[in-house]
Image (cartoon, rainbow, N blue to C red; front, side, top):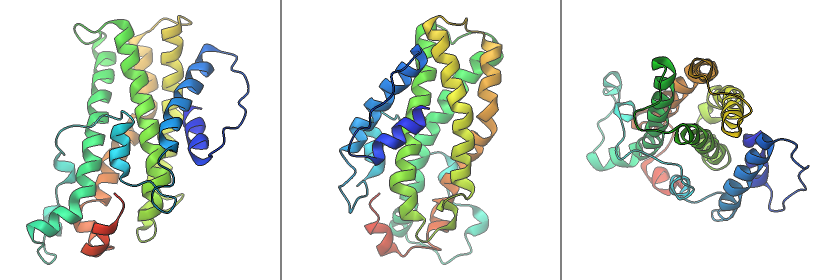
Length: 245
């Protein structure tokens, strides 16, 4: 539900009337959607209707990222038989993979924290119940904002030349599968925070696992599509420099 609200509000410059929420869960979802959309909407018209520097906008919206990319964004050895890139050319072609991977690595780490608590049967040392639930809810919110910006401002640009980013193909299908489980996870956490239900880590772990496999595959697959050895098959170095990324 949060994903639909954020996406709808980002696409429209006029807020449509929203039916009154009947539960604490729906009220919380709507509030978070309005907060995310209000910020994103300011950037909708900066680049011929597309957002300039979407990775910077993600950071400005509070979507955290790690300081360095991981090995996922590094080139594959088997693809090194292509004409060698200069260090400068490699940086140009690989920059999107590295930026994306830094955001994705934060999602990986947060997932590991949440899922680790479920498998061990206890929260991280020193983390209160409220802080633990808030960490989970922030994970849901940040992933929703991240995917909304991708679908509205990154994928349409890349899809002009790259089939993997076109509608209904693998990456967008993965988004749908992830959010089917993510919304159930968010609802579970909201109910725990409101007192409607008691947090049971084993139960929470089962909800997480409904979308864990596709999430982890997606976090890697998307970065691999953006690596230098793949990007150079579709874009010239000059085109890469002009991409509003």
